Image 1 (spheres, rainbow, N blue to C red):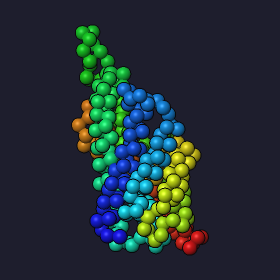
Image 2: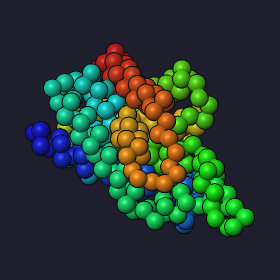
Image 3: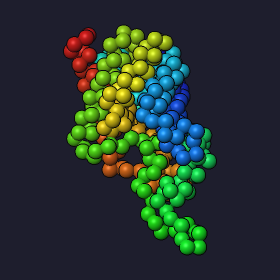
Image 4: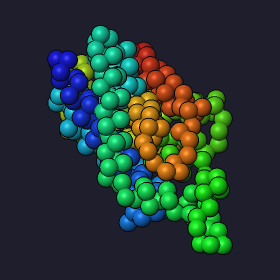
Length: 263
């Protein structure tokens, strides 16, 4: 597997993953979307299909890690060379940022309609019928489209939740027997992984929104911070460490557990 294979496969695969995953979040969130308020089931299955599509596209090129936690787990398990890890991680982060930009492009009109709606951003009309821009908008009214956040903000609980959920994901991938020393998931492996992601979302996603992937959260969060969106609110950088540290620790633990129990 060449460096160009890793770069191309991980960049494109992760971009598609975030495009479809972020896209379902935008569809459910934005006021002018036909899918608004479709709910948590739509989000969990949308992310599952996003994983399926990204993994299928990249599987034969780069191995379809699409996630630094998976890359770290495979490196500890022995299926990926440590020398390739930085290239995997950099390509995944780039792909995640591209995917987030594509979500913005697809929902460009909806973002602006949503974020200029007084009902959404917390502004109010004056007696003259003008919008009072002095009213403070709600914090992060569209941040959830780009990145995750906890329902109850407790750093220890939040990071433990991400660790446990990521161990489930990475261990499920490692034990499929379809990774062939990091050379890629088969079609069945991609489907199994997608279903595992749906299961994690339904069962373990409630507390934090189940990032289970550092670049899935960091790349779009960077894009959110940079995009010129009106009334978009903050990017919540104080929480950003949780969906980075938790999945990386979870991936490492899964790799070690695989070596202890299954190798």
